Image (tube, rainbow, N blue to C red; front, side, top):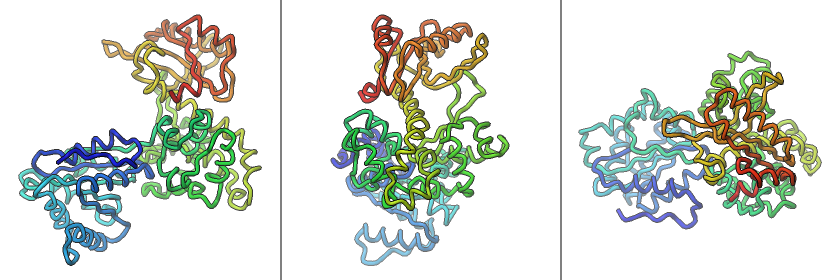
Length: 491
């Protein structure tokens, strides 16, 4: 198979396209299986349709329906693909899967079943049927070069498809998760050149491609002066699909049976209750009652569990989808007003403090950690970061505890993780020598604890509002003091 060129209209997705085309063009004999997953609106369908178009493959999009209806639709789609005069009659999924394998008798061909969870909901035996169809020494499999790709957005379901004792475990030659765009790519995709505006928009819509093209209809903030107006005409407009999208994201997940409970858990996290005890107090429940809902939300990709890098028994939870955070932090408390007002300007103005402190601040901290881990120049921390996280450090002498927004660890030749830097991130606050002294105190405490590398650890200040002249002078005189503003995060 000749090299498959990525469509010019596809933004980025270079690693995903390489992985898919390599899988589709694999010359090895025998049919193979791949699994593609990712949260909704990330462009999985666009990727797979483009692959089938470039390679002459077969694409089938499943619907929610009965088993019989799905088989009839597949038979009709397959007949259309092959130019047959009438739809094929597929009596069972055994014969349907063999018909898909027969497509690859003469050449490698990608065969895509999109929204695979819909089919399994109607027929839970389908993964086992595919497992048996791809069994070794089976003639239908051995004589085929079909590259079967199963795709789905129900993250909890797709995550279990190849895990544990699942029927398809060990059968897949590709497991591709299509991620959201990082903050730098998102700014480029949205066409936002001003870094502060880019970060503020990212705190609302994240890196989900569909939110620009389909949901906002290419309406992007023209610059800093247009940001508030853009929020009003897109996310806060009842006529915009973005207005209710955060609610629909939960409804799309089949594992979330008690929507009220899960919305409350997300509201607790959005309000700053990032530990299990705080979430339980917010909900008026016992901490032990939250194990299941937190695990389900994590499996669905809606929250992430982030360990305290200095305390093994301490964990924080963070909402993974910025639009969900924005909904619970800004929109949900004033939902009735938003639905019925003709002009949400005053509502948005009254929400400015919640947006800046409760959403922008934590999002800025997260972006600083991501940038430090994957994008910062090597010389910034003196070595390549191997782990970046947040944590807490006790100060027995002052009877207090310090929150560390950013801790950077390296990896030495003995597989130990020396501390490279401790940092603080402040979105709306000009940072000065007081912030530097706080970081020095934290470093001294870590040295006293015997933390590897702490005595040489750099002190990193990240600010969305800038730095005092005194702090800039201190950084110029000491290479172990590093400063980064919003513009640096987009370089």
